Length: 349
Image 1 (cartoon, helix red, strand yellow):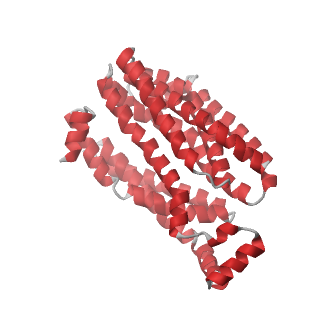
Image 2: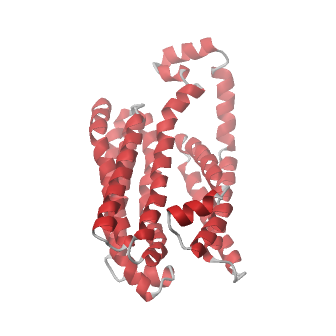
Image 3: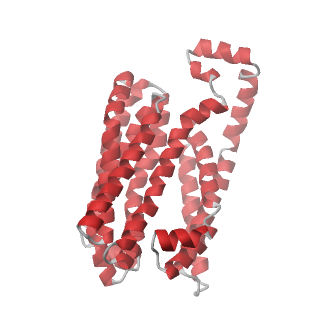
């Protein structure tokens, strides 16, 4: 009973949209668990230099998504939300299983090493003293929780921003059109934002392997940020925008024109995502994850304040207001982390 109350009364969705959303979310129930399972084993692969296998997993996910979507589409009568949710769930579950299988040899070696190196508390203390790494003796559930909780809450806060945006778009002019085009816009922007998401894990491994990797990793981040935003600009600022939104995404001519403006506002988001990834790398490497959660809080506050101003005050179109809010919120989060990252950079460099 909570779901219709939340989606219809609080968010203000149309009953038809509510029904489609409910069905899609049921199909997506395995998705969070599969993501966590997959990323755990991907972390092991990245830490041991097996990034090629992570790419193989991505290919498996995309191939499974495409084949599942094609199969479900053949039924003809299934709504697009059901097809999309089914494809996403099948793809991420397939990648999770593949990641576990590809990491099997590395996991077996880690287990063998753990038996040999950490058979007793005394052995751990000797190892920590020999390596100069006191964290080797601090790997308890409490230690993991203290380190991980800010990162977990950061993801929760960031994801919570999307229902907030949906709520405001339901109150904005052209709400149905905005709700229709924003997922298409976000999917395009996300293609270029993934560069930052992937780089975070790789850069953490690089800095863990030695401080001499700091400057090359930072230069690469700058180039990656520019390339990601320029790649998005090459689509939304050229005739390719019409190709993407109409021919590939299947929007009508009216909706495609409706989507171009917000997409152009979001050109900077891939670069800001790479910047955020680099900032998180510095903080994780310095064992300071607390500022990350505060940055996420600032991002959500900036996003909500922008939505209140643009929709509540200026009555802008929902999709345009949402795009502006995403950019302002991310700038607020990046800005908050500048001081903490300056100290972390000084410690590394």
